[in-house]
Image 1 (cartoon, rainbow, N blue to C red):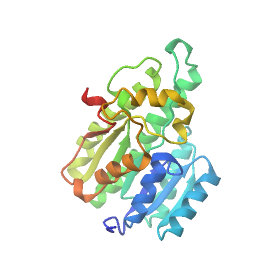
Image 2: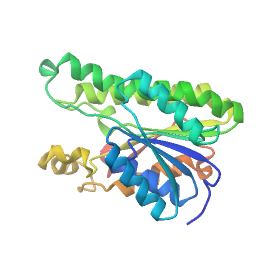
Image 3: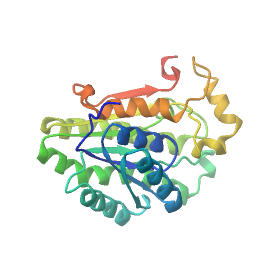
Length: 249
């Protein structure tokens, strides 16, 4: 495995499970010092132990991304753990309450926008200017295939991720001239701890894709880490679908 992230610090939100955990492990394997955030301290500590046991460098920071003070504290702590810098930000964490529009509680609507839009916005606000001052950095946002087409029951979730897709392009325009690349990955149905609640619906969604199977976290992680790497040096403001071909049909 190449060590192309050696000397770099990467913050992976929601890095204690699912796609985020796969990303954190891959970045650590490639030499990055990884900071994992999440709400579940036991799960976060376990992820860190596994990465360290494999020879990587990792720390866990407990954070509630629905709380703005916690978001800012996470940014500050990540900078501290990184020796004064964060070079890679993976905005992976997200929540996805589903249901008919008329039945979505205000509390759910507010929380999905707080976690899926406000938290990435203010992490970028805290970290991207420091990346720009150093002349380099990479940010990868996780969106969803339902940010690009309408699906019943996913109005709140899909629209929050559509906002993140637009932010990806706006941030690429804003920070790109200073050497900071901002891109996004749009996963399709992926089997994780979080999507387990969907049950057979996950397989049903996968059945609408040309590949006709549910994806694995490591398959999505490979694309995310590619976009964060120097191998993607000319890619700015892109949204990479990793969805078994769903957006192609």
